[in-house]
Amino acid sequence: MEKFQFPKGFLWGGATAANQMEGGFNEGNKGLNIADVLPGGKERYDILMNPGFDFEIHTDQYSYPNHEAIDFYHRYKEDIALFAEMGFKAFRMSIAWTRIFPNGDEPEANKEGLAFYDRVFDELHKYGIEPVVTISHYEMPLHLVKEYGGWRNRQVVTFFEKYVHAVFNRYKNKVKYWMTFNEINSGLVMPIQGLGFSIQKEEDKYGPTFQAYHHQFVASAIAVKACHEIIPHSKIGCMILFAPVYSFDCNPENVMYALREEQLFNYFCADVQVRGEYPSFIKRYFKEHDIELEMEEGDLQLIKEGTADYIGFSYYMSRTEKKVKADSEAAEGNIIGGIRNPFLKTSDWGWEIDPEGLRISLNKLYDRYQKPLFVVENGLGAYDKVEEDGSINDDYRIDYLREHIRAMGEAIEDGVELMGYTSWGCIDMVSMSSGEFSKRYGFIYVDKHDDGSGTLERKRKKSFFWYKDVIGTNGEEI
Ligand code: BG6
Picture (cartoon, rainbow, N blue to C red):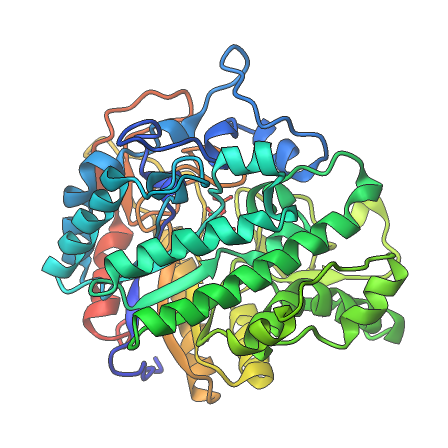
């Protein structure tokens, strides 16, 4: 078995988001955010993918699993001790914007919220675990959505600037690794969570979407510059959802189609955030879709100056494209679409499993940007079974992760500069796209179920011990 050489200091760990794990949705003066109004169950996916969401809570119709989630808000000490037992070097988490500014537009930050993250960071440092913090992970203040129209409104940039200053100043001695917007490009398919508005009619999507993106790019550049000024030794990255696009066959028309899809979905945001300018290919797209951006003087210069130090990305699947496709060819369940790839198996939720695609992604990204890469999400959402003796034998998860870690090892041999790997959902929590607890990613099982029942007890799965060995041998024992 080939042994891989992961760099010294490689950031092995796990990844989470505040809204999917913390719970305590109305404690500590926290305000409501977008995730708080998203229902549990299959309805959530339809809401995210379709126009017309009202951003209201309907308790008579739905359940809201993010409200209690897995109660990390009260159990963080126990959870961090388990991460430490696995030997985590890094823990990716997000700060809930609404714990710091409950409505988003207050003059002063909320003291209780600031104090909560102090406690979490101190607990991580107690075990030598480096926090990797996402500033905005699908949890924009609901007030900014309802009263201001989300990121379409330029004023939101100012509120975000205030928020980032508050967290950089407060945590400058505790957090070195930051990321701005989680999966920033996902707004191209699901604007609700990332861009903070729901398209009302399909045909209205282009102008508002790209205007909102322009505001996020400006906000991201402001955050990068502020981070470097306030925390000189920091590293702040962008974060994209990367799913390499394959042409279904060698028909040049399909190859060109796949290339266009890749440019728009995978590269558009990263090009702006990493290279510091709008890419040439987007001009034609803007023209064809009648998109005219409103910019303020100095925006383009700011974007040029505030480029990301590294590229954080999530990797779950690849996507196969064909210019003209029949309905029967659709890759049902593959969250970013495409047609079924006959060479790949799928997860229980229809996501295509493609470890080689991770090596391809790492090579593509490094060739294009020559900046350090960080795989900040990857993992298998699966149904787990607790045996009578209490064990959870998740060999399928171990197989999935092993193959993806090997793919990273190969990419490092290919010459790619890789900083770390934080697998998604290191502890079971609420699924982002389906709002289910039964879609489990963790090394740690949480006794919590789709009907809301469960004791919230934590249990180590078989993968817990396996990952501990992986980290302990710096990836040699996989
Ligand atoms: C990423 C998100 O898209 O995928 C996470 O950044 C999310 O928030 C993860 O949880 C897995 O997706 P899901 O829908 O299976 O939870």
